[in-house]
Structure formats: structure tokens, C-alpha cells
Image (cartoon, rainbow, N blue to C red; front, top):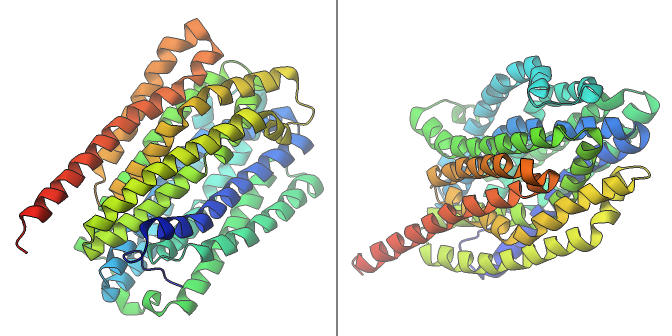
Length: 449
């Protein structure tokens, strides 16, 4: 069922849209969690470190693909909000064409250069081959990841956040079964975890598309909708590319952080991997809010309802405060328990390094939540440049923090790199939204009645 986000209570609509997205994001994390839990328990600490060491490289490439897909969803929301269903169908068709093109461009070089990327990141020699076996398969399945994100983005663009969740639950259960099959039964090692992930992701994408075209007439395309036109491609890529680059720029900063962690050895890498998983679980309400705000702002921009955008952003700010408090509580009070999911018989050293990171970053979850709020809202409003530049600022701040703090503070200095990046990136985003809002208020007040 489609959801028109241009009428009704802003807070209620945002929350109702967010709940399925939150559950979907948690199940998305569940994909990676199951990989790491089964890998850590059945293949050992080194294998866990190997899979964990690929996280930032995966984020660099798959984040770019995801950003493109989310950008397509924003354009869908604009057309839906404006009730231009002819343009909506063309954007759906164009999304599929561009998905095939972009995935082909990304897959070939990443599969070929995966081991080189790992070497550049100073991946420890004892886990290098296992890490490469995992990441190569993940990169080979980029098109499946993109197709799921595009189909989910299209459905969310018309207000349907429940359907992607349902199919993701099914594929998550399948992922568990396939993990056990490939790792425990077939002894496929770390590559087996990757095979399980991409197969399950592909099934989720297929189910989304079948449902999408059967249930929603406004999304049912014909041959006439499938063409490449300059205005359409420019519109889609003008939103998609900045969002994609923002993911990739953030990922580069994460790669710098991972490289700094790698020099401390595989035990610290395993600790950091487990702590990062806890952090991802604790902060899932934040990207959820961001996804909701991108669609909410996109639909209301298309409908020209600026007062609803202002009201939604005010309420989104208070949701940020709640999200930060919940995330910090999970990390501080539940951190050790969740870390133990990923490592069989974790040592005191593993717990110590993991909790050092979690206790440090949890104090800065409010700036992180505000990044998701303002960055996604601006992208939904078609303001892609500053969100992309904020990613550059985030990269620079993370690099400076590592350069200045690693030597005097050691691993504790590494833990401070993320907070420095979040604070630095959040300021220009907030200022840009305030300027945009002031400009629209002036335009509205000066326009004839």
C-alpha cells in the first residue's frame, strides 16, 4: 500500500514509516552479524578478523552502489509527491537501466583488484587470503545488492516501507540456512559466508520486483518507458551520484581508520570488528530516521508543502535525541554481552579493546544522529552538494584525529577518530538546512497571496 506523506500528522507519518525501515535495517545488519557469528565460532578468531577487515572496503564499493540506488528512490518520491505518474514510471524504468550499467562498471575492477585493496590497507598476512576470498565473492554479487536497494528505494519512494521488510526477513532466514550449509557442511570457509549473503540478497531483490510490478499499477512499466533521455539521466544522477560519493568518501575515512587498527594485530582487529557490529546495532535508529526524512522531504517538496517539511524536521530533531540516548545505553550496558556473540570464549583483552571503543563513541551519538537527519533531508530536498562536501570534511577530520592522536594515545586515539569526524561533518549540514529553510520562508512570505 502506498503512503502519501504530504498529509496527516508529520510525527505519526515519520514514525510509522520508520518502524519497518528500522526493522529492515536491523535485518540488513543481521546478514553481516550471522556471517561474523558463524565465521567466528566455526572458523576461529583469525577468520573473524579476516571478514571484519573487509568491512570498510565493502562500504566503499557497496556504499557507492547503495547511494546511487537511494538517489533513484528520492526522484521516485518527487514524482509521486507531484502525482506525475507518467514520469514516475519512466523513473522506475530508468532506475533499472542505470542499475545494470553502474553494477557492471563497479564489478569488474573491484573483483580484479580486491587483494590489492587489502594489501594497501595493511591487512595482516595471516588473514589476507581469507579476507580476499570473502570480498571477491561479495563484489561479484554487486548487481544483486544494487537490485535489492533499488527495488526497496522505489517502494519506499511511494511510501511503502513494509514490503521490503517482509522480503528481507525471508532472505535473512535463508541467509542463516545458507551460512550453515556453506561454512559448516560444505567447508567453504570465508567465501561460503559471502555466497550465502549474495544469494539471499538476490532472492530478496527478485521478490521485491515481483511484488512491485504485480501490486502497484503506478509502477507497472511498459516498453515505452525504457529509454535513456538526457534530462531523466541528469535528474537521476544529480541526486544519486552525490549520495553515492558521500557513502564512498565516508568509506575512505573508515578505510583509514581500519588501516590504523590493523597495525595493532589480529586480536585488536577482531575486537574492533565485534565493537563495530555492536555500534551498528545500537545506532540503527539513525539511518532509519534518515531514510524516512529523505522520502518525507522528497514527497513534500514535490507537493510544494514547505511548512510540513519544517514541522517534520523539528520533530526529527527530538527523535535524534532519543535515538542517541538509546544507542549509548545499548553500547555501555549491553556492549560486552553483544561482543560475546561474535567471538567464542572472548579473552579479557578482546572485551577491553571493544569496550574502550564503545564507551568512547557513545558520548557522541547525538552529533551522529543529526548527521543522518540533516544529510538525508537535504538530499531529499535535492541539495546534494553540501551533504557530499560534509563527507569530505568527515574524511579530513578522521584523518587528522588519527594522525594527531594515534602516537600519543595509541588505540584510545583511534577510538576518538569517529567522534571527531561526526562533529566536523554535522556542523555544515545543520547550517545548510537553516539557510535553506530561511530562504524558503522569505520566498513564501514575499510571494503574492
